[in-house]
Length: 478
Image (tube, rainbow, N blue to C red; front, top):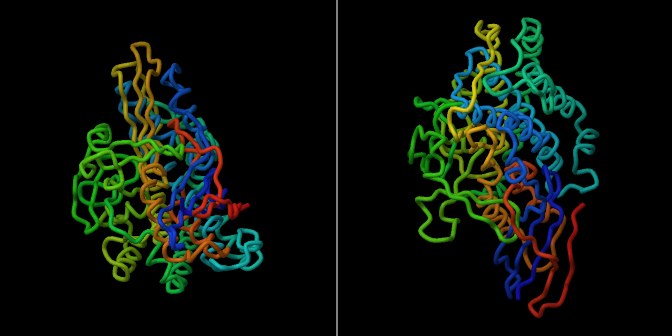
């Protein structure tokens, strides 16, 4: 029997989870597991509901990224109703998704990860948090608050509310966009773009201090999956999927998201409520680990050739000149997020200049014309799939949700294993070591409320045991 270190709960993530580190007889790390300990169950209790209710229901999956679920769900219902979304509504939906990417990425960077990056992985845990950061860098935190507020205002302009808005509906959006809404967002564009580029310069200035972490925070080859335009331009809302390998070679391109089941499998975990999607072609047996792929901001910049916006493209080129064309270290999820924030703000400005945005026709109407619909888009944390089946009356008979956090599950487990092997030495753990293991999870910015839908089994108890089965200790992280 091996020693087990338990970190419970994992801190500064969205949701509830724990980590176990298994030691061998020599005190070295033999295995590591990331366990998600909450269960939401949307795939079960949404059955029997009218499909038109699904956007509003699934948006309640999470208060951090409800827009992502609204969009993917509305697109799935669009497919069942065979609706063509009016051009103005399509632009509004894109605007909301860009606002969602901004506000979520900013929350992840400033509130969850910046205490580690700016105060230090080994800083006093009593102050290694957003409140300690406020004392040390008040202007920086103020910048983050204002930048996130900008993203939330963009969301509210389309959805009606910053959280759980009703403005994104099957067939389009609920209301036309107004000149006042456009001008209100436009007035804050310059401030938001300056704040985002300043944040990028700050992040670049500290990366050299984390060389060891960059080398072991998930620095391994994998596949990467994301939406991408046929010409290689970054995409966040529509179109086909591209998969590239660790060298950047295209494995498959312009895959229709509705055909995801041909390529992606889903494995259940006996010790977690999180499913493990995998790339089927690489799994010869029941072990999903060879089929590991990654999604999210790191995957998107690996899949795409360019953002298609001048400032973000210039910074992306500079970043690639330093770290390579394909970025494998999960530590660089932080950099990818800030690059996406910059690109999103630039794209918001471009959408605001499009006169189609103010057109009055914003919703198509229809009934059940297909018994299955799949909606997909890029949530902040990665590609999101909503797959619904209905009967002839439009009542939901089956739901499958594939969430970005689940798609990164295999990679997160390998990441914490690499970190633990680098930093853990024997049965004793310093706070800095524990924090680095947690930080490996935070790099992926997991959203556990979104990703726990499939039933699983959780162990009744977890302890730190020596090879003779005696309890050594139990580590709690609060």
